[in-house]
Amino acid sequence: MNELESQLNNLRVLAQCANISLGMVSEDKTMKEIQNGLEAIILETYHKHRIYFSKGDSTWRTYIPDDTKANRRKLIKRRNKEDLEKFLVNHYKELYLDKSRKNTKLREIYKEWMIYRRDETPAKCGTIRKNRAEWNKYYEHSVLADMKVTDIRPIDLIRFFRRLTKDRTDTRKCVTNLRSLLSGIFSYAVEEEIITHNPILDVNFKQFTYKPVENQSDNVFKKDEVGKLLAHLRNINEPYALAIRLAFCLFIRIGELKALTWDNIDTENRTIYLNSQMIQEPTLNDDLTFSHKETKVENYIKGCTSHGFRKEYLTDNALAVLEKAKELNPDGELVFMPYGSPMNTERFNIYLKRYCNEVGIPPRTSHKIRFYSASVAYNGSNLVTISKMMGHSQTATTMHYLRDVIQDDNLEETFRNLG
Image (cartoon, rainbow, N blue to C red):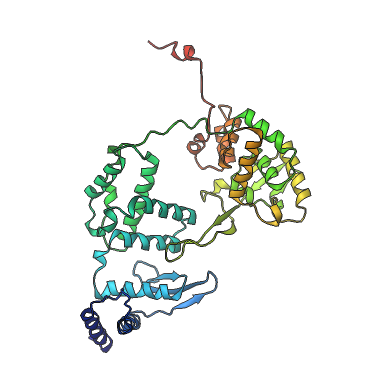
């Protein structure tokens, strides 16, 4: 045992005598000094890489050994130095001292997994935010959250989901999302070598009961409703009204609409090229809160496949809208810039709701415009074309958007050859 480790053991004995742990903060100054001494020695003894500040993304960074990586090290970053050092202390304490990684509770692994997804995966902040809401609603106060990850068996998961679904209060989609969340946490625990197998893979979800999903075919714009809305909007010369009109002329997503630049428009050939999207998302902080939303344009389309990049045709109505947009915003880089700023999805939907109310039709969100476009364009034989225009990689996805297009009310014809 070297001198530093000997000193560390002495301080650990003092800490134990004082009934504190390395992770506990005491009001007593002496206890704080003991804890700070322990943490400083842990870093000095075990951490061999430089801790530095990256101006690129305003984070504190360092590396820890990882034999699974090509360069045998793993990048770790946090928003502030204190949180980074706290992570390192806990990492080395569990790895070399307490050997308590196997005692980690599911709640703690969940917190680590959230930071891991932010820093190491392409998961969007919106998805992470949704996961946090799901965790807080279904798992945070459950028995599972306080169990050691190593103790959780398939039967524990079966009993949890059986209680959750016995009254059919949640849909299959909701439960599937909850299963995916847990699966992600367990997969992370496997990667960290806390467990060797993901227990949720051994659970058969066909055994549970789910809330029936109501028919959503009526939850889309109807042709007569759109006619009233567009007739009303032709008399309104403001950016959101024009953007709504253009959306009804295309198969465009709201993020793609917000990111449109004049370079995307080719009026001579009557085409519009969709190759980027604008997102407005917060950033996950180290304490699992979220910052204010930031606006940025990303040069890839939702789904992250080449199918997202596409050209769409500009009708006479679409060209008329763009002409008015140019008059309103002659020098702007973006096609639509209300009050000199990029469009906001929430504001778009507020305006859409307002205009729907003004003409007396049920208000719906921007996403329902894509349902309408796909449905009215479908003629029974052009599914592949519509799928391409929607930016989908599979026609099965496009089928979800088709509403009130495959119905046949002629029951006599349907049943004629039966029996």
